[in-house]
Length: 118
Image 1 (tube, rainbow, N blue to C red):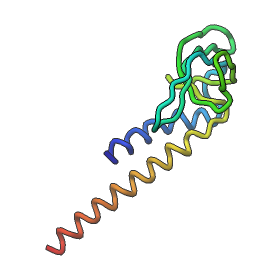
Image 2: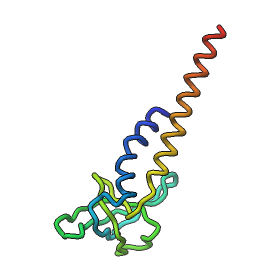
Image 3: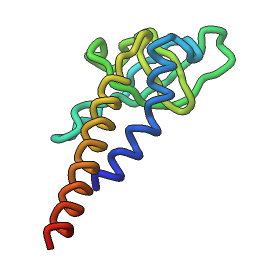
Image 4: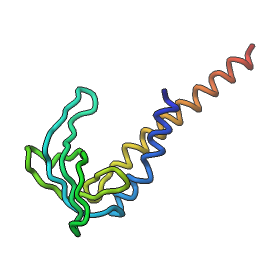
């Protein structure tokens, strides 16, 4: 489980770092439907439209600025994900990756130490 978490966090880091540097396609996100989960929080599905108007697609994003259907926020598309400009999502993924890596190293060390003792 921790290896899966490590893999997912490491895979998400490049995109979230690009979002922090505004490396995505700028545009706006219009909220349509909110989905809330007891564990993951709330996420809005809606429409992302690029600033130049060439791309319009259904997608989802999380933002505290979205309160009700029809709300619009500045957004950027990085890969298949939608982020807020200057997103700090990479911090979450970095903490997840570091924590998972630390657990995997500790677990490996503990197994090695136990075998060594006999």
